[in-house]
Image (cartoon, rainbow, N blue to C red; front, side, top):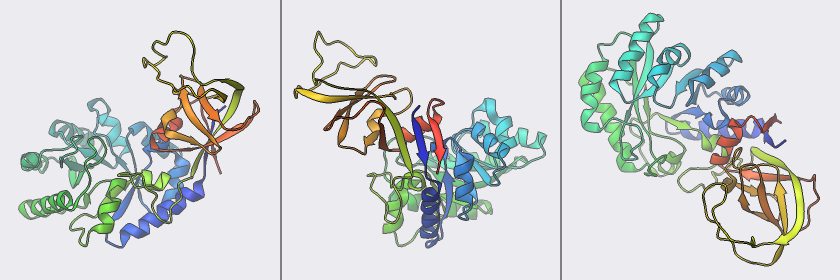
Amino acid sequence: MPTLEIDINKIKHNAKTLKELFAKKGISVTAVIKGVTGSPEVANAILECGITTIAVSLVQNIKKMKEFGVKAKFLLTRLPNLTEVEDIVKYADISLNSEISTIKLLSEHSLKQGKRHKVVLMLELGDLREGILPEDIDSVIEQIIPLKGVELHGIGANLACFGGVKPSEENMIELSQTAERIQEKYNIKLHMISGGNSANYEWFLSTENTGKINNLRIGEAILLGRETLHRNKIPKLFTDAFTLICEVIESKIKPSLPYGEICQNAFGDTPEIADIGNINRIIIGIGEQDVDTKAITPRINAKVIGASSDHLILHSKNHIEVGSEIEFDINYSALLRLSTSPYVKKVFI
């Protein structure tokens, strides 16, 4: 069975290092652990570093962490589904929002549960995922303020997730100035002005003034030690907190080029494969069902040449015996799928 080995101490080190780094400019860290499906073990390790807010995208993972006794403030990063609002109020302390109809429903359910749910309004700054257009934010705020069941806890922005738009001095100033204007106009305190995610690392280093930005939602940098604009390693962080371990199930010398008439493969693609003669062709017992095979790198002298749903094909420079275990480095898309798969064993070290 494929195994995902998780080094808790390396994750803890990354979280502590980033918390201390961002604190130098007055920015708190919300730890986003949707990449490990809200693992209680990972959550507790991060909380030990002094980070107090844990974020995931699925309310089911907040429920899981609470059932395991994780003591934290919980933030839901994905906009609420209307069908899940009751559970979101029950389990999440804070949620990111961009639709007034959803916020009104959150208020209704909060009142029924005797709570006051915190909402963070997401502002559209160009990445074109979630967010209220800047010209519409006042009309939304004016509808939120009278609601008894919700508190306007802050505003935020999402960048470099869908459209790849870089956090910059310009868009961070826009968010900061918007927060300042809202506080002055409506005489309210915004507790969270959340500038973005791990992609904000470069902006953070280069800016002399973070303005009103006082929070970042950091996931990949904590888990994998990289910023997310160029996937460069962040100094002093571990990039190998996760190791994928898989077993060799076939090892033979075979032609590099498939023979016969070539049509579509299992995923509807027509393969284009170079003929480099006979090679050590290794099959590993994992595939696209459980991992993004383009997002893993073997720690041996071999390279991934393709995969089907449950077979991974390697070209190895050396012969490898059947039954041997191969270790792989992984990136974020691989981590997401591995963490979600019930067919991958998770081992904490």
